[in-house]
Structures are given as C-alpha cells and as structure tokens.
Length: 298
Image (cartoon, rainbow, N blue to C red; front, side, top):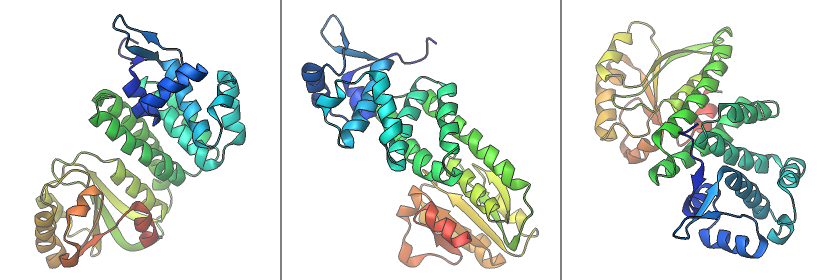
C-alpha cells in the first residue's frame, strides 16, 4: 500500500473535483465541509476520505443543492442522497469521479464494484462512450498536470481493456451476418494507444462483420500481405498521437494500398484534425467521432 497516494494538496483537489481552491477554502471556513491537516509551514493536506467527500459534495452542489444544506449531512447521508435523487446523467458524473478515486488508489475492487453497478443498468456502449471515454480524457489531463503518474493511468487503462476483451469475446462467437467487407484494424508505427481501436472492433463484431485485429505499431508495408485474403478490405485506425505527418501518411497509404487494390481506409481520433479534409486521397474516409462510425456500420 506504500505506493498508493494517500495525501493531496488543495490544487490537486481542485483538479480532481473541479472546485476552485478558493471555493474549497471558503467551504472549509464557513461550513466545515473538510478538515485538512497542516504541515509545519501551514500548507493544507487532505486524505482520501476528504477527497471522496469533496467529490460527492461537488456533485450535489453542481446540481442545485446549497452548500449550507450539504454541510448538515453526514457522509452516508450524502451518498444516499446521490443514489436516490440523481438522474442517469448525474449518476454517470458520480461514477467518473469515483473511478478516478479507484485509479488513484489502485483499487481494482472499487473499479469492479462501480462497473458492475453500471452494467446492471446500462449497455456496454453507453458505459464506454459516456463514462470511460470522458474518464480517459480527464485522466490524460491529470497526467499532464502531474496530479497522477503513468502507473495510475496504465492501471486504469488495463482495467478498461479487460472489460473490452470480455465484451469482444462475447461477440466473437456470434455468427457473422454481414460479409459485405472485412475490416482490418491496426495502428501505425509508434502509435500504442489502442483502447479506441479495441472499441471499434467491439462495434464491428456486434454488427456481424468479420474483423482482423492487428493492434498497435504495424508498419504499412506489412499490410500489403493481406491483399489476397479478401477483395473488399476496409482498414481502420484510431489515431491519438501518431503519425506525425498524417497527410503524408494517408497519401502514401492511398497510393500503395487503396488505389492498387481498391481498398478503403477509415480514420478516427485526434490526429485526423490535422488532415486536409478538402483534399482527401482516394479511399480515405474520416469520422468525426465514434457515433458517426457506428451509424456507418449499423
């Protein structure tokens, strides 16, 4: 347990909860919402219990409950109020915040408990798109600001990847119903962020398509060997940080694979924002988001 982060500064609480440090200080002074310890130099220090309480208080306050009222409630009363009163959207916000706590504490049991509760009420698609994706985005920001470390981010990604593999395994045993084309899912060299690509594989299998999942860091030259497998191949990538020059990459891909073999290449992810959308080469198609992709294959 020595590696688990047990204490936080007020700026870290601000980043995790979305509540400004100045507001946290006011809540402490006027309403005794939190009771931090202090260092010898009078710097506020908060533990995990304080973090979880603040996350819950922030959620209630955001949705109309006055801080003066919240301050009269016990920790259990606050939790019960959240479960009883909140809409699905608000419950999702609460889930994201609690999953952050699970990540910070390397708490797989808490993660699993939250996930199982969500799964009993929501589809996996809803959980991934409305909870996991926003969570991963926020986690990236927390990593950039050094509130969390890479090990915590990897811990969270591993748990989400586990759930994806389970759902993909369920769909892989379903009879293929759509043989209009075969999808080849891969990431270019040095692109290692594969959670988005795994989710696209889940959606394709869920819609009855045959897929060939190659994973990350695949040289373009290796893909040419697939040309004899199927006459209608559609390559798919979810690009987060690579390739550096995506316009050159797509031009080369179109020239070497799409044009000679009449294949397609579908692209999603942050890197697609760098593409010249007015002059896309032959066979290249861009999706602004995963929902567009789902509409295309459904």
